[in-house]
Image 1 (cartoon, rainbow, N blue to C red):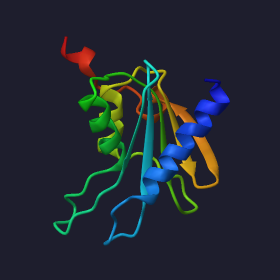
Image 2 (spheres, rainbow, N blue to C red):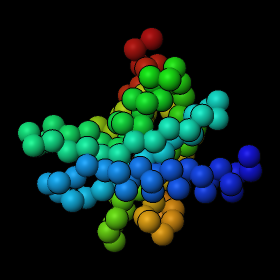
Image 3 (tube, helix red, strand yellow):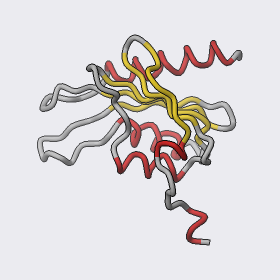
Image 4 (cartoon, rainbow, N blue to C red):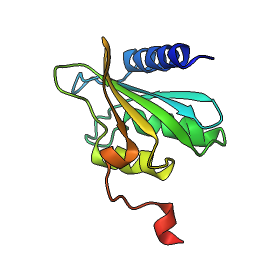
Length: 135
């Protein structure tokens, strides 16, 4: 699969996930799509809960699906939300992404119109704490 075709597929997967978000309280949809180092694709959407803030972020859902399938290495992740501002992963999700990434993993911040900004894991979460710190 070409990089352009794969990028389009990941973008579309994040957009489709965003459309399935369960957000009756904030009405703020977020979708995420992951490409693993082995080429597998996973997605997730945010899911809110009446016991606010006990919801789940889109990135966490995609990572859970990836791990459930035995995958442990994120190559790229697309995170999509609406609005004028960049919808970047929250602090908790930055750490969740970091757990399964290298410093070169690419995080694409998207709006429904396309990719707005791309960052490496090291740019998104510099001087991060990861599994190798525990070795």
